[in-house]
Length: 147
Image 1 (spheres, rainbow, N blue to C red):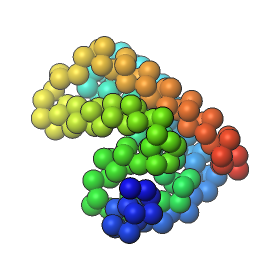
Image 2 (image 1 turned 60 degrees about the horizontal axis):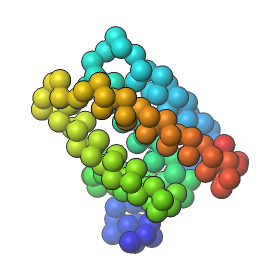
Image 3 (image 1 turned 30 degrees about the vertical axis):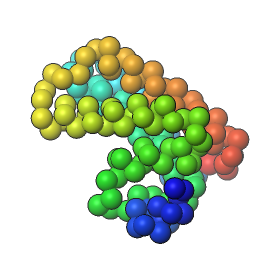
Image 4 (image 1 turned 180 degrees about the vertical axis):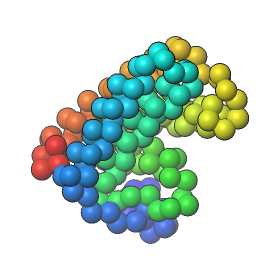
């Protein structure tokens, strides 16, 4: 599968991004990475905030490739799964990890408070921070007009 196949299946639709949009998303990631480290809120919420930072990284790559997920098409799942098609197969372990985090976040948000440990939060913050660095470098190398 590739992005064009996903678009043909109706999972993606064309999206024309701009430097302004990408810069706003980068600022959201910076905010979320900072806020996820606050010890004044629960581990569940810190996890959700770090997850949002990582998800936004994936979204930036998809936008730069000219797509966004169509509404009603399992948006978070598709955004995460697109990571290897936008950046490269080397991010397959990150994609797998973020998908597990997506499931964990759903439980913490909708089913069971207190289901996230401090260690899980710290791990996700590290992964999200590393992904932010990778996305920033990828933008500079491939879409310098957006960086």
